[in-house]
Image (cartoon, rainbow, N blue to C red):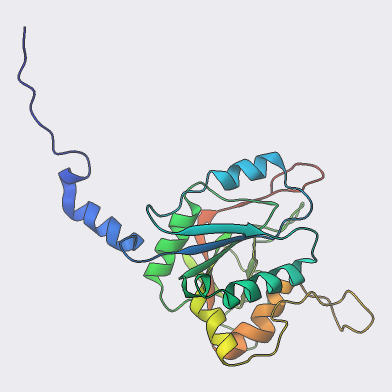
Length: 243
């Protein structure tokens, strides 16, 4: 026996105000073009590669991935930024995404970081939350921003919050391209990314990411934060343990 089917407007149309608010929060109606950089060594673990392949990007927005192989990590990031800024097309894009070869971001991680960027235009970079490897690892929320003296003491995560800090890791981080262009326009001396403590000529020990925030970005007025709603795994490539 034939039945009369009642038309349904659809899940999103059933609460148009809520759906509209989500679209506005994500900002996907604007240009959100992303240069996606992986500073890989000679190879990448299969499970990490699959997680990277599964990343969702905004629909019908331009995205281009590229990588380096075999370069020291600070040199890899500096080379990548130089190449992008020298490209007449890519230098005009909105975002630069870094995903390191030992990090496992959530499938919707890029969308979450974009939403955090839309909500917080005061920040020039926002990272997902990931921890240093090993027992007793600490969250990579580097520095108590309430302390006027620059520091990189690891801060406690605040669930669901975007936490400003003095510096970020680069394992899964979204940057506004305008920051790098601004540094270039100011002719800030390079390298912007430098691993220190690797030779007798260097004082102290520091990674390329905190060197960038401590010596380059923060002194030129740029701010950063960690999105504690975007949870990222950090794999020990020798043991396969994800911290």
